[in-house]
Length: 404
Ligand code: CTP
Image (cartoon, rainbow, N blue to C red; front, side, top):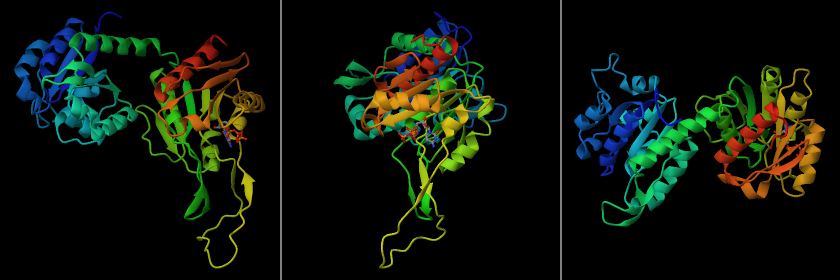
């Protein structure tokens, strides 16, 4: 694709000197055939006038939640309803802080909070603001919410300093946006497929206040769910307890114990084309159900006995109408040996394995794929990038077996 014909873009401007570059960006987007609706924060209007952006976009510019031009007075919903993408350029440090914490105190932040379409942001700020711990914390939150950052670039800044924080040039942003749409259209390799994913840890109660769980954060499972959705699939996730928000477009059933996960997954699994078992499911649960808190008293520590939990993945793989099954394994040693054994014993076509100590709670990961043809290490990267590669590897194997 060399143009953006038919694409509907909401361009948000928050306050910053870089607003002057956004005029050029609007021109570029319109020149490539996109429909651009501009939304400005109050402080953005101090740097460039809505009149300029209205003239360049050919559409009214919105600055106010209470704009009577919108029929139902719900500009925050209507503006993105039929849009493909929101891009905020420039995204100031203040805007990013509000985005990270879900504030909705003006039209642009409310639009971003109420969106069900992708959001790209092009940060623009002074080097010290960019490097501030608070900004870096906010970036982590924003990225984990699935927002894509474009830049910032490094160079001379309006304040006279030199460093990271400059907004990317309009031409570079145009290329980013074109590439973004290209990537989405060529990566719809699971279009029409139904994908069921388990994610997160499970929690097995000992008594009403204590329990056994594991160190899975759920990040990989949620990243896989997002990547599958972006590849065009209809995605149902069944998640154990995590601190994560399910990705946009992904429906999620929340469960606590392994048995609840089993009960949620097994009856529906045959309706899916692909089952990806990312959850770190507890292998055992406490045999006796203590309805009251076990008291310390002065006696002996309690002795707990365990019973095995059902193996969800092995059960699904053995169903008469089994979906195409993918397992995950985090091992501490002998990765290849354990992964191969696990793939064979669960009778699944693909197993994704990694070394637990390398990736727990990190945003980065490195995995190796094990299938009938052998093993194949994927390059290390952000969990979101690796999730995309895993989804591509699944599509490869379902469509052309062993093409990696
Ligand atoms: N799994 C599952 N149900 C279970 C246990 C595991 O669905 N009760 C799935 C996991 O989601 C993962 C794969 O099986 O995709 C491997 O999980 P893992 O815990 O590593 O394997 P186990 O078979 O439990 O082997 P072990 O704990 O001995 O390493």
